[in-house]
Amino acid sequence: MQGYGPETYGTASAEDYDDFYTDREDEVAATAAALCELAGPGPVLEIGVGTGMVAEAIASRGFDVVGVDSSPAMLAVARKKSAGKPALCTADATVDRIQGSYSLIYCVFNTFFMLGDRAAQIVFLRNAYDALEPKGRLVIETFVPTAERLGNWRGRVVVADMTATTVTLVASRNDSERQLLENQKIMIRDGRVELAPSQFHYHTAEQMDKMSGSAGLTLESRWGGWSREEPAAGSTKMIAVYTR
Ligand SMILES: C[S@@+](CC[C@H](N)C(=O)[O-])C[C@H]1O[C@@H](n2cnc3c(N)ncnc32)[C@H](O)[C@@H]1O
Image 1 (cartoon, rainbow, N blue to C red):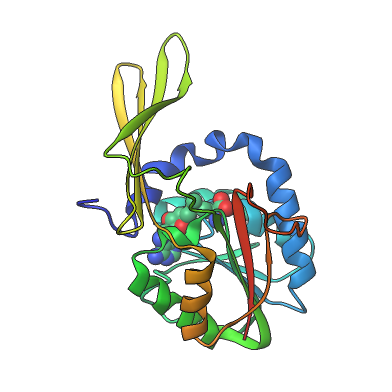
Image 2 (cartoon, rainbow, N blue to C red):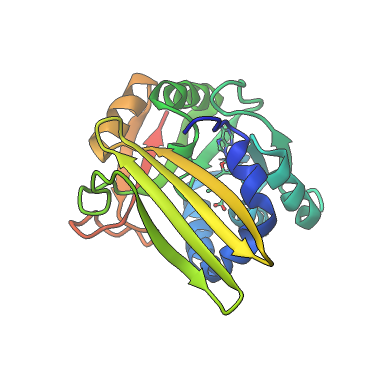
């Protein structure tokens, strides 16, 4: 999307992020519980920590957690809630070397697909490999990019929310050849229009394994959900656990 960069999503979405995802409590708890089981002794690193929802839940279980994000706006929201835990720092995970050494690095809620294009994602995978302790794990959770869910739309608009005085629309277009999904959330309220763009460079599970393999990582397991469900035809999520 023209004009889209590593800070764009956070700048436009930070203020409303937690309100928009109030129904995510159970999912965050399940995500944190599964990640704690994989974490080893710690420390733990979240890439694209956002407002800190998952990192806070893991830190509250006694782990040392560091959260990295390219968006100062997202981190400002996280800092208001965190009281120093998790530790937070601004960095572009596809450019900056990861500081420190971790027994678990994770990137959840489709964030891996948002990090940049395929080349940038591979830079991140190499950085993650270097920052993992021997036998450390990298966990990546994304949506499953099926043809039914991602038709080759020239463009479509859905109504995400509507009241007597507000409406939230999501305009999307998908380029299945480039494996690029672009969304624009359009919020109309109090006579104002606000835009919140997002874009996803997506991959199949096989493509993810190839990219991770090229960075030196090995697939340990793949699940269709945080209760370690077997991936199935109807799975909407794919969770890959890679090891160094
Ligand atoms: C969908 S949000 C997910 C936030 C959080 N992980 C959660 O579960 O709520 C994606 C986050 O990734 C961040 N992000 C996008 N590109 C990034 C990059 N290149 N490096 C670091 N963070 C990035 C965005 O700023 C945003 O906070």
